[in-house]
Every structure is written in structure tokens, then in C-alpha cells.
Image (cartoon, rainbow, N blue to C red; front, side):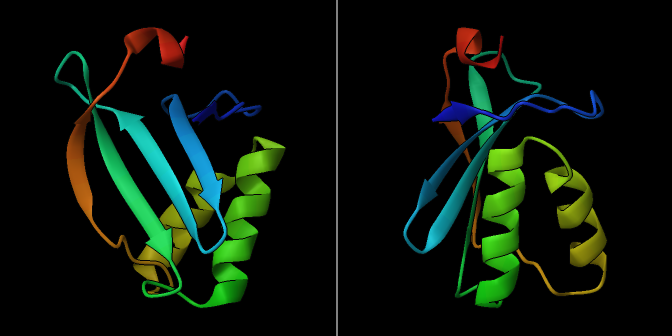
Length: 92
């Protein structure tokens, strides 16, 4: 997992992983040592939206805004969300 650079300084820290056809995001949870895992793939959105999310993740800016904006319009949906164990130092 790679720490999202969050160049804007807005929002919480999170980790991401880019695979061939999916983007995995892990956000800090309010539960210590846990994180919310979200998987985005072509089952949950069109390929061009997934590719844009991957580009924004690598750029380190604009990803959370893109997700929030496009979830409201129905263009982006989480494939699933589960709590996973995380190492808090990964977010530092």
C-alpha cells in the first residue's frame, strides 16, 4: 500500500493500491488499528472513471473530491467496504 500524498491537506490520510483493474483505498477508522477498505473496479464504475481515480491517487490530490462528487451523481460506487487491520504508522 502507498500513502496518498494529500497535497491539498484536506481530508483524512489514507492508503491506496493500484492493481490492473481495481483501486483499493484504506481510510483510517475511528477504531484504533482498523481501517475502512474500499475497492473500486469496473464492476462498480466505468473504466474511464476508474482510470481517473488511479491517476488522481498517483498525483496525490483531488481523489476524495472526485469520489464525493461522483458518488452523489451515481457514477462511482464502492464495490464493498469492510474493516481491516492496519498499522497506524502507515498513515504517518
